[in-house]
Amino acid sequence: MRTRMRSATWGLLLVTSVGVATPADAQLQWTSKDEKMNFKIGLLGQMQAEMADVAGTNDTATNLFFRRARLLMGFTLGEKLSVFFETDSPNLGKSNNAGVKDTGDIFIQDFVVTYKVSPKFMLDGGMLLVETSYNHTQSAATLLATDYGPYSFVESAPMTERVGRDYGLRARGYLADSHLEYRAGIYQGVRGINAANDLRFTGRLMYSFFTPQVGLFYRGTSLGKTRTLSIGTSYDVQEKYDSFGVDLFYDQPVGDGNGFVLQADYVQPDGGTFAPTLPNQTDMLIETGFYFGSAKILPFVQYATQNFDAASRVDEERLTAGLTYYINGHNNNLKLSYTEIKPDVGESRTQINLQWQIFQF
Image 1 (spheres, rainbow, N blue to C red):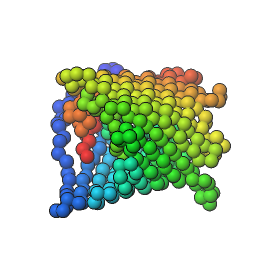
Image 2: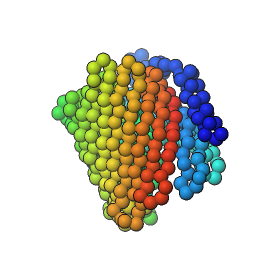
Image 3: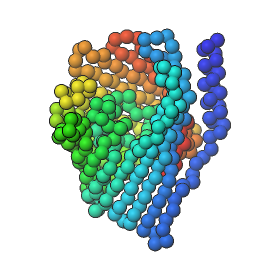
Image 4: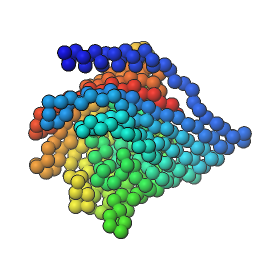
């Protein structure tokens, strides 16, 4: 009976979501009379249904909540100065294991002031998404799967970040006809007693063949519109902590509006004695999908592993398979996914997600 009720619930949610989903094309934007100042506002809403096995029990947690509820704002002040501002209230309404719903504290997710001397040199200051891998630096609105890789943000809590963001100043630029991107940042990191720790340094290089990327955040699939092959490497260090990563992103149109996409990320973070809650490990993410333009659907697969250097730690792998219906591209879509979580020790668990995304900016 319980299985039938759950199947009926998911079926109803899916039918209802498809029935009420409508295209979102409008954009709220204001421009001054001299066209030197511009302001626009947008939103990202990811409404999600989730069923997940609870580790160590026979229970299945069932939730209806907002995975992300964000307000986005952008300011352009002349040709050189711009501001990107974003709030979030993640997991709004989701219940924890004690049965308490998240009350939805709203906080600043991103605040980036950019001064553009030229495309070859610009400065980003504020609360920045740290560039430790391609997936880590992606926009949440264009992810291939229902979420980031499960181990893409393992350094966030040990390095006292806020969802992968840190306070700092970063140089960023695009060379070789914008195909070569560099990022070099100095961040707060873990301040320690009397805020006496050394500051944190992060560097990244990425070369994009074919169509370059020149935005603040990296993108996901173009849904068969743009050909891109990007290869990147990152290094992050603060005292005894460091992280090294390499990654690849490939997006290829395949005739008649179809498209193939592939991403691979390899990251080795090690907190050492500086951040002992971040043990030495190797994290990998591989995800791929194929977009069928005529049907507006994209089957995808995501595979991720977390392997610790210490034998006493429990390694883990996750395999996710899913399907996205792009009602109106990234502005309006439905994603359904099934995940199997396999630790080296203990029982495997499963998780099912249905996500409806509304995005406009």
